[in-house]
Amino acid sequence: MSSRTVHLIGAAGQLGTALRGTAPAGAVVRPYTSDDIDLVRRLSVREALAGLRPGDLVLNAAAYTAVDDAETDWDLAFRVNGTGPALLAEATADAGARLVHVSTDYVFAAEPGRTAPLEPGDLDPAVEPESVYGASKLAGERAARAADPSTTVVRTAWVYTGGPESPDFVGTMRRLEAARPEISVVDDQRGSPTYVMDLARGLWELIGRIDGPGDGTAGADLHAVGAGEATWCQLARAVFAGLGADPGRVHACTTAEYPRPAPRPAFSVLSGRSWTDAGLTPLRDWRSALAAALENR
Ligand SMILES: NC(=O)c1ccc[n+]([C@@H]2O[C@H](COP(=O)([O-])OP(=O)(O)OC[C@H]3O[C@@H](n4cnc5c(N)ncnc54)[C@H](OP(=O)(O)O)[C@@H]3O)[C@@H](O)[C@H]2O)c1
Image 1 (cartoon, rainbow, N blue to C red):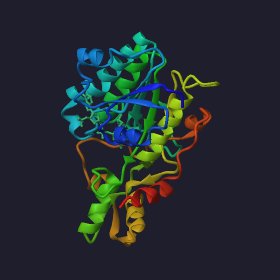
Image 2 (cartoon, protein in one colour; image 1 turned 30 degrees about the vertical axis):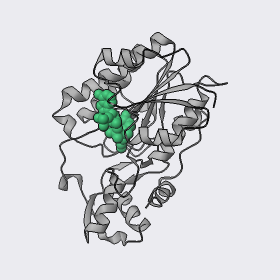
Image 3 (cartoon, rainbow, N blue to C red; image 1 turned 60 degrees about the horizontal axis):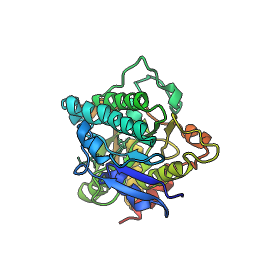
């Protein structure tokens, strides 16, 4: 990679940590945690990015990600996820830099009976996402694009690190496997499990292509997810099997049996076609990726 400077926002989060750990030789990474930049304050964003130069890249991996809390804490969710990306995009537009903004499968509205993986063009602008979190992330996609039309939006889904202490779904299943004889996991929500290290490497590949020959990613919406699809229950069973435990200890239940404050999409499998059409390497199959994550004991 050429010596492009990458300003990494959300550097201490799950994805930010993986991006720092996978940065290729030649990338100049400037990490910003929430101590260095506050996305809800215009002045903080302006000051933190005052040194932005033409050709620099801002990668926004920061977000308000507490999906259930957002249902009641909607004001902060919209300020971080809706307004924050717009402030970053104003800065990139002014400096002649480029924004890559990470978003989510939860921006898609419910579509009962859908079984075909979602393409970026399937987003219906007339239909609201189901959750406040999804709505706030969709607002951020739109506001960033309005402020800087060259913004590249990368939607991902069901991201996990999978370490024994990780707060994500895979890490949680690891701890439950050790702690409980049997568990119940919802089997009527289907999505795209994504290993954070694969996503991080994919984002670095994207960054390496930006402004290179044949790059068509300016202003594009891309989907970067692990290949294949699963329900949460199938993912949990795969975690148990990967640990050498009996997957039969994981019982299927319904969303109605496990109510949460925020509604989750019944189907939010993302298609990887936009990613490969952009000339990027597909993320590996979610089962192989999970096996790699579980090796991190
Ligand atoms: N995790 C998933 O399953 C998933 C799925 C789909 C899409 N995504 C998207 O992927 C991206 C990365 O998610 P993640 O899993 O890495 O989330 P994460 O671990 O929760 O990290 C988010 C980071 O954002 C920072 N942040 C929050 N509010 C901020 C503010 N006002 N100003 C500056 N920084 C702020 C947080 O800092 P503090 O901790 O200090 O507050 C945290 O380090 C997000 O855009 C998310 O929407 C995630």
